[in-house]
Amino acid sequence: MALKQTLKQKIEEFRPRTTKLTKEFGDVVIDKVTIAQAIGGARSVRCLVTDISYLDPQEGIRFRGKTIPETFAALPKAPGSPFPTVEAFWYFLLTGDVPTEAQTAEVLKEWKVRQRVPSYVWDTLRAMPRDTHPMTMLSAGVLTMQKDSKFLAYYNSGNFNKMDAWEAVYEDASDLVARIPVVAAFIYNLKYRSDFQTAPHPELDMGANFAHMIGQVEDYKDVARMYFILHSDHESGNVSAHTTHLVHSALSDPYYAYSAGLNGLAGPLHGLANQEVLSWTMNFQAKYCADQEPTKELIREALWDTLNAGQVIPGYGHAVLRKTDPRYMAQREFCLRTPGLKNDPLFQVVSMIFEVAPDVLTEHGKTKNPWPNVDAQSGVIQWYYGLTEWDFYTALFGVGRCLGCMANITWDRGLGYPIERPKSVTTAMLEEWAAAGGRPM
Ligand code: NMX
Ligand code: MLT
Image 1: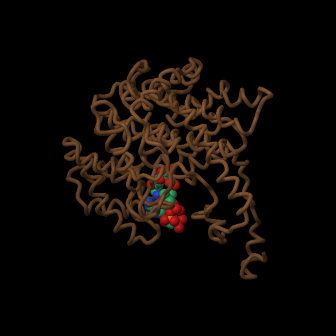
Image 2: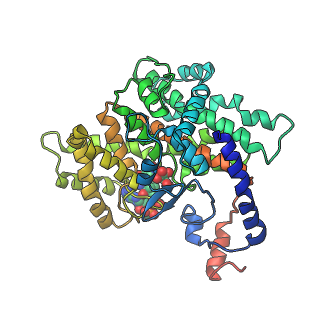
Image 3: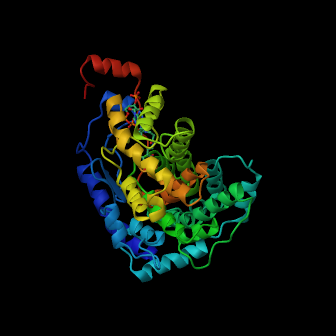
């Protein structure tokens, strides 16, 4: 069965579960909210629902119930590669089913049609100053396509039906996941390769095609596949996924929603941390290692200098995780398996930071999680393959994150989630409830 038909069946079978929970068990309490949580970014408040992925603080992410190694092992692989195609992963994220080779091939074929980017996007991007940040360009590129949104056209058709609306979201979502690597590659070539553009390959899978479009070597095809899958989804509460969900909940179409999600991803406490890691490491080498080899002692000194200057150590800490991010470990293992990378001086420094930073952060005593997150390890791989323009790293993250955000909003519409609108209170109210020992219920 084709992906959309499978999804239709899945969504229709799933709906009664959500309806029953809301109608029959809607009053069941699943959490309480403290003053610290209301002021402190709603940390740990259980008030979002998604079945696409789940983040356990100790174990890390599971995509559709599978850990990262299980996901990589289960899915059909790209030809001659130990890594699955992004197309197979997309099928899996949307449906929860591991696709067959034939189902994967169908998605690949469909994306080859969907990946055609309207030429007005190129005009828009070329009109922007060349020193514009790639995330601004990516967000603008996505937003520019909004005028041709199929969801928007469906909404304006006069036949809008809540039960079927997910189908138009699915169409936009599929177009966007197929197009975003093409847009990102265009931006890369525009900014760093003197606008030398390579057309998408008619047969290559998404990761391989991205490598092809930016003029990368054969081995980078696996890097791209791994990177996009690892960065795809991290349950619903992270800034990019939550923003996309929130904006789409107003029935803003997927282009509006994901452009907004990308703007959140561009923040240094979120996706931009991967570029910050590279710039921190380069600054460290320039400042502390001009006439000596990097050592753990020098790294310790540099980490303390950063903390004492009131800055965060990029790539370390997490709002949910309380152990080393398995996405960090997956990339570290890739480095250890890749002969040149294993001995790469930058990887050695990143490994030394891994040995030193958790102790320094623990001694510093502020962060609840001194362990590295995904961003601490991703840049070094890109750098090794010659993708040294680190302000592009978050755009790579944005290509991967599109998969998770689009799968989520397709299901949001399928299950008819309403507009999101939490309640706010005033500081005076908090003071009154604090004095009374709690809010009178
Ligand atoms: N370096 C220094 N201080 C830190 C760090 C860090 N890496 N992580 C947390 N803290 C501080 C944090 O700033 C806060 O300080 P204060 O009380 O003065 O405001 C305190 O520790 C408690 O913060 P937590 O509750 O541990 O972390 P929170 O949930 O608020 O924030 C992050 C999570 C990820 C924003 C935070 O750990 C951070 O800023 N890390 C560095 C940036 C980074 O790597 N971001 C990428 C996250 C992954 N991603 O891709 O999105
Ligand atoms: C993510 O992948 O979105 C980050 O790890 C941040 C998060 O989960 O909050």
